[in-house]
Amino acid sequence: MRFFLLIAVLWCGVVLGGWAVAGDKWPGVDEAVVEKIAREQGRGARTPLINTDQGDLLLFVFLAAGAVGGFAAGYWWRMLIAEKRGERQGRVASRRGGS
Image 1 (tube, rainbow, N blue to C red):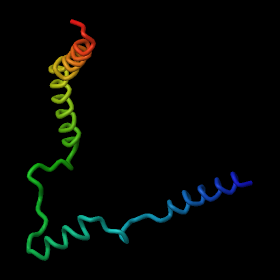
Image 2: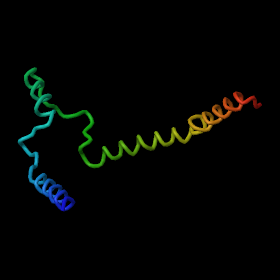
Image 3: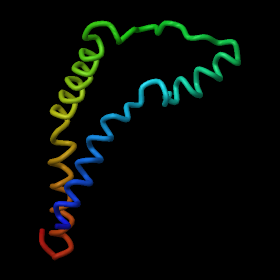
Image 4: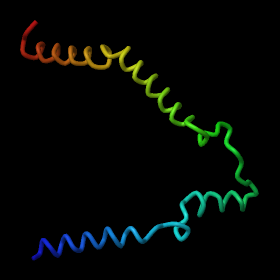
């Protein structure tokens, strides 16, 4: 019985939570704070220098950044991973009296 009651309460929370859409009654920080202070200071909104909202430009920027980061990690893989592991093994061997 407790299990059924718990499931019913959770289900009602999910269903009723779907009805409470934020919409216009809960403005974000940008609208509530930043834009308000900017208007008070006489600085209105302006278009960005590089508008990433058009097409797939933002997707391309993330793709290019991932490719550059992947290339750098692959190029310096030995320095990032292999040498650190080798240094640790060397330290352990020297503590044990090995070569």
